[in-house]
Length: 325
Image 1 (tube, helix red, strand yellow):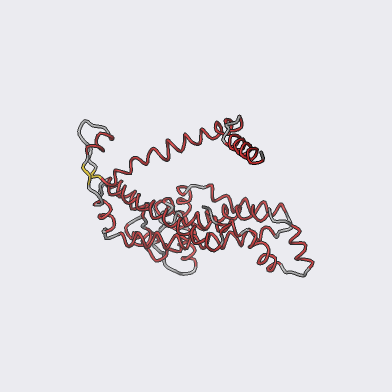
Image 2 (cartoon, helix red, strand yellow):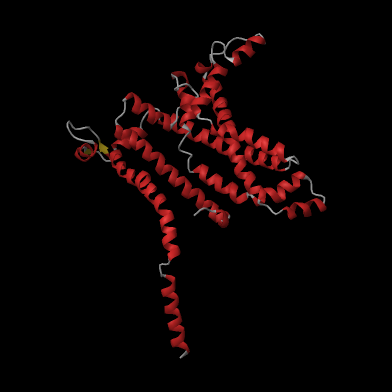
């Protein structure tokens, strides 16, 4: 009897487990718009990836899909062309090195600023600092590029006016590539540090204040409180942001490298060209076939996916609770 009762109860539990309820219907309806959006704008366009494996040519009197199906397959020739391109080494170097610097600075500086602002006694001052640092994040790179040009303009630019005031000579900033790695790093940090700071500050405000009170009673300094309480408490958020940033390491901020440099003039090609600017300029000038540029974009996506999986696997070995997957 006991065995039969246990079997019946198990079957009842299984039936209850797979029963579709009204709550499930409501949740499904709530998630339906998002599902449709991802299906239409994220997954359906992935069909176009086959263009990277074809010698795409527009057929006379045919639409895009007809031309795509009628084009000949060329296997990995588009990828070979991209990887054997003379500029591939420069593009890879610039994309990876800039992103590595951005990842480090966007981790260290926002965390430090979040800890400092959290220590302010004046709430009004704290809100003002947050707003001022967060404001650049809402500005487009097109608007920022005009401010940068007003500052670095060869004639009448604010930077050259300061140099002339101290007896120096004008600098042709847009023809001097040695300065642009520092300018690009500064502009990226200036624009994004406010957003990252607010993310870490939100994590800090969720820490139990009794931990700080106990630390103060034990005579802990502000540095010790940050080292032993704040940073360990926000470590999961730091790791999550790090993994997400690693996922974009083969991508670059197109507006930063193209708009701020005033459409990437020839003297700045070696220091400011990235995969994204290469793809855009190749499509704009028509020097490369669309299949070759599609191969470059697919190469970026695959490399980013691999780096995310590798980084997440390493994190899961060190700290399983902080891994995303």
